[in-house]
Length: 143
Image (cartoon, rainbow, N blue to C red; front, side, top):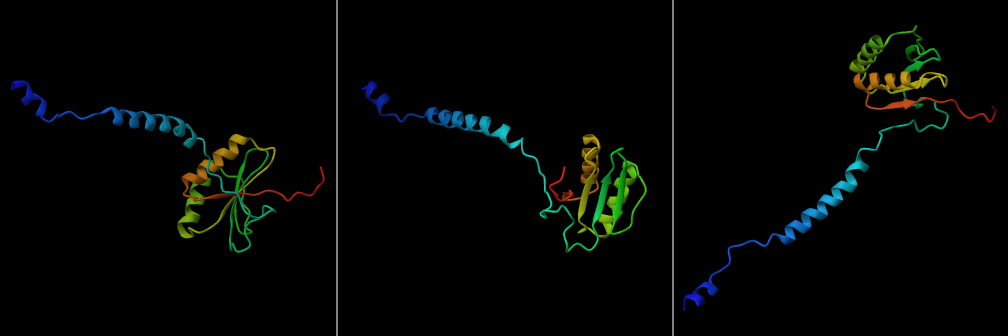
């Protein structure tokens, strides 16, 4: 009779084998997808084919980098003299403080140092620019 009582008792154990299977599948999925998530780069290019500022923009803030690596900033038709990185950060932040919807375009000489262009983009991001357009010259067919 003692044996019959032990057989009728309910088992108080949880079968964890299905949970382990699910966890291993999830681990494999996350290991495969995690490196893919880190390789994306946010770039928003202007939609005009000529590389000019949008026609509906009243005043566009243009940051230019010449072949020597000097920074220039202009709003509308006003041209500036060369400025340093700290001044660029302050002026862009000031413009966006008063006109947050001002479009910002970056115009870099093709002979400019790539590091200077990336530094300018970093400064614009720190100044609070939500997106930066890259200006280009239209293709003329000549070399």
